[in-house]
Image 1 (tube, rainbow over the protein chains, first blue to last red):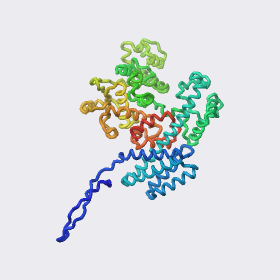
Image 2 (image 1 turned 90 degrees about the vertical axis):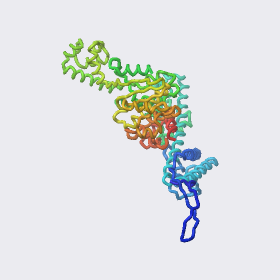
Image 3 (image 1 turned 90 degrees about the horizontal axis):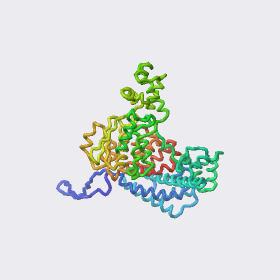
Image 4 (image 1 turned 30 degrees about the horizontal axis):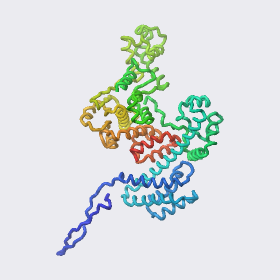
Length: 246
Length: 288
């Protein structure tokens, strides 16, 4: 791989019959391209896209819903046949079809992301372009997914506060009310899902009361459930242990 | 260090081992949970997590299997002759199962004097005790833990077993404020010869040396690697990589976003609850 800046023209001499012709010689110093050097740029591009996507209202938690027009932008850059104007046009059209409004801040972030991405892709060798684009894509995905998880964390904190208020901060009272002693800590209560709200049980009635009084939380849960990403337990199964005989 | 050694000895010696508890330096999933649930600086202040970091409760079903193995071992030892067993121990059991229960409950006739010489190896084999951990305080700042066996079980690749060693070493280094090397006996001389400035020794596995880019993980990098490896142990199963090398694969991904996507593609998206945010952030520190 030969970075552009490494080409250094020099003047050499070539002999042709009795004449001496001066012609430029290009001395190249081959160097391995280090994709890690692009990491700060990749993170900055991903942040611009994530800022724009805060205005994107995809429903659910699918890749399409999380990435919105950015996935299309990355596809167009990957194919390498579109310029800045075409990419922006297509992305904005896609946005308009799904959401009625895009604020100037959001549009500017999208423009910054696309422009910087095109500059980075232009400057890196063909062989690593795909990898760079993949890194941008997964970084945006990470930022979006973390934002989604943080919203769910807020919902969970509201749910925990709701129960602490209702039961006076006494986990024993929760156990007695729900008839279940497995909940030993306010930080490890079940996630308030809509399915639970439909259950005819003390826990179900508490979830129902919470969702009725916390409209925003209810919307977040609905969003998560439609995308198939609402956690059932706050701990997930990550805390489970494999068999000890392993 | 003495607490840890005492805990290891108590739970690994047949005479004192509780039937429902086990000490195991390779219990990475327990350690990963403990690391993930508290700040590293707390580990040095509170001796309790250190002493219990490598011990865990054995499940009921496993305990039943061990008991069955002990009954079989007794039957083999006394050639199915219950009278011989009763003569030897000076007891009046009506079955081998009763004798096995007496051993498990540490009843004095089964463990007194010469009886213990027969009982201990039977119990050790049946309950799969591994009383082979030694903590060698090489200098005031370096603890060596020589191991004579593998680290991580038959389902682990050498790389995954190596990561389990690094995790345990990093944890001990953080908790005891010393440098730690968990090494095979055959590697001891090499470790002492290539003693670097770091706090945790990286086993001589090419992929690990390449990943950490060092032989000893430095003090400044130790916390982020401790948290990241612990997070990888917890998330690897959700992402459903091949079990032999799942932890290493998590730590080799180019981005945390890709791990999240893989977890979702494996159908485990619902398990990504808010409680996993610290784990994802810990991985972000080393993956980007």
